[in-house]
Image 1 (tube, helix red, strand yellow):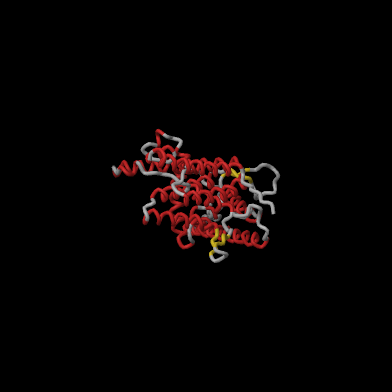
Image 2 (cartoon, rainbow, N blue to C red; image 1 turned 120 degrees about the vertical axis):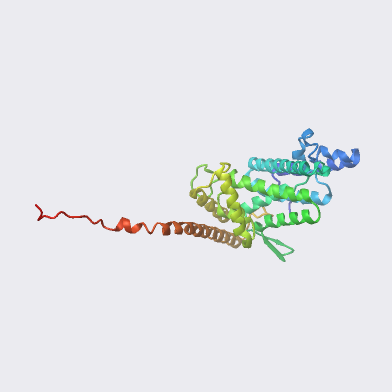
Length: 348
């Protein structure tokens, strides 16, 4: 049997950077000076003098365990996304979810230092691929939400759509209990960066039409990719209320442009088309050979889309009903025939 290593070019580069930067970081800390790690890791107090660290910090891991986790993330996630999107679009996504989370995280710690005057916040070390992991999970949620990942030979089965919330919950609890606050911040900022880009800005081909033209859509307006659908069903209504309030505020101040009904419908068709198209398996990029699994995923996608549509129609009917009730008293005056006085013909 002949083994072939088929790793897309940009994914290979990222793996090489991970190994090179992680080894160099350890060499700087233990071979030169313990404080020399700031040439690759992000330290808010010194970042202005070493701006390249907003990129290198993501690929400079502290130990072998985190290197292995980051390597698996880049290998499997990078192979999948680079083949699904292409190297150019994947490169844009990588730059965004690498630079922006690190920059935002440094601003957060600078702000906390300015408020508390705690010197340790200004020299905290921000590094690792946590933000990248969060953004990758958001991308998987968009592309294959109903795909089931089996662990321990089927003992544990988890659908891809549940990974982002589990990832955020784990990092939040770890940050609060174990004090890994930098991972907490990076996880949330990476998640929000990835979702915002994919939801509102990323261009993608139109899969919902049979047209041979090069039609492209901007963002993903599908209801199953809304912010509330990243969370368990029990808390979705509460999350949806808060998210809608924030979204309406951003629309009011013209930061966001609301999706039209046509865009939402097209987004739902896109989501269904991705499921019916049989996108490759997460761990086997050769594609899924089990037609039944692809059909089940497509059916689950349809069920989710119909559920979201039903909720939207129910909310719309609830808003319309009070308006129609309020307009009923004025109806009789519009329907009643006017009474006119007829002149008396006997009068002279």
